[in-house]
Image (cartoon, rainbow, N blue to C red; front, side, top):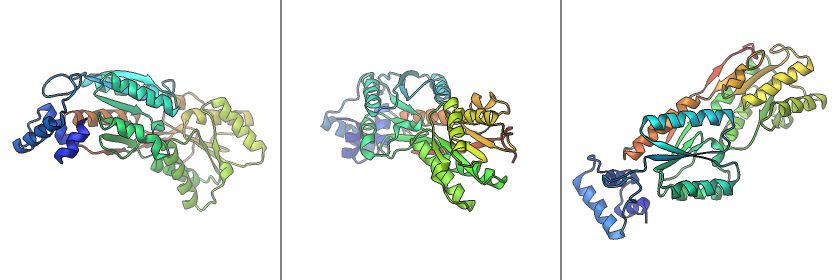
Length: 333
């Protein structure tokens, strides 16, 4: 028996049940009595470790990320923990890797610790097959699930995303307008974010009047040397490209290394755009033009939404953050 069942039987929202549980005054006496009667009828008692009728809260939020060595995720974790501390909450961090069974295991671990909510950092937690997301929907029946740059429909699931589609569309369109005719798209996986980025690239190619070419969409590990070698192989196989649009700054670093190895001038012979605006974008010569997907804003917005949810306030299920293209030396537009 959980808060979702109380909501369903009382015919009120989960937020309303949460308000009653927290003693929030913004609930009518009639509704309060109805919810309390249903709780009594169902035998539902808020867990003593969780938020309850003026009792205790663990004041702890679980954070899950796939790989804390990833520069963007490391930055996101820093901002999340900072914001949570500022709101009086501690955090428990689990680095889950990318295997579905491991993600499920760590989510259950955090639930067993009676955390007040779980934040999923990064879009790798949203799978293409609906059945692979069932464990998230199940967990959300008991506690709020917050998605940082991932989106999933469901009760007590809240998403804060940057507009990856628009960001990549804009970046690719700028390259075409600057005179580039063959933009190579480097990507690293098929996460929710990656698929949104890919759709933005495809739309930009079409709108620029070019034919989409499969050979110009290259999957590459998140390693600069691997990216450099891949670009070298593509070039030697006869595939022409005069620009590289990479979904990670680390891949854009590989493109800079490739240009140096091939004797190409940047940006005259080869324009390069990265993504995330991480410190890596400022560690090459020339420095890399990169899409800033606002990691800090994503995390602050996520925590702000979570605080509202924990207080029983109504809030948007999805918040969209606008990106910004930071122009540096690898482009000439």
